[in-house]
Image 1: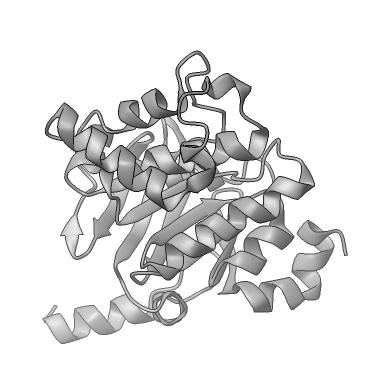
Image 2: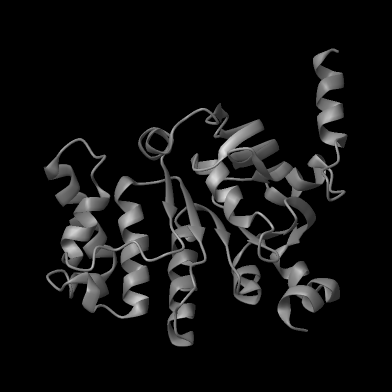
Length: 266
């Protein structure tokens, strides 16, 4: 097969949800992050059954769907926490599918914010940030980056000597996001940013993510609060049983009556 025919076939290939790669590429606005026919799971259990994903630099994508649909496994598949059973994962044109999570953090500049609280409650805010810079060349680099974070987020700077366990839920999430920024990532993976937060803090967290995107950060998030996630993101993917069921702009999915019936309570 010659290269022209191969490209044509790739563009016309249809995912398990009936969305062509060409349409996904158009929605994504580029291929800074690209998954092609990704099959991933844990041990012998396959969770994702051939997922395609395209996302341009500085764009955001929200994954929604029922429990067990494979949303977090997409993040795990990108970061290397799931077993890759087939397919490709590339970032900025380079194959990263075979890299370990630490290599993806160090070399590919991917940061992953876990769903569960990952702060060290007995450490101070400053110490938590420094821990996030463990992959930086030296202690002085970590301290310099910590000061840049404090300059960016005065709310954390005012609490730098406080134990992290004393922070409010919103401040803890801000600390988790800030700690992920210690390595200057180009891609931020966020699992359930609003989980466990009081309503007054949810808007703050999405404002923080929007600010990062405005600075050029590429963001992929999983969000059970589909209304908030789709309102934030440029693009939304709906996953069902490890397959892509639907893909569109976040705005269009918010207005889609089928999505509303299934996931938005409408």
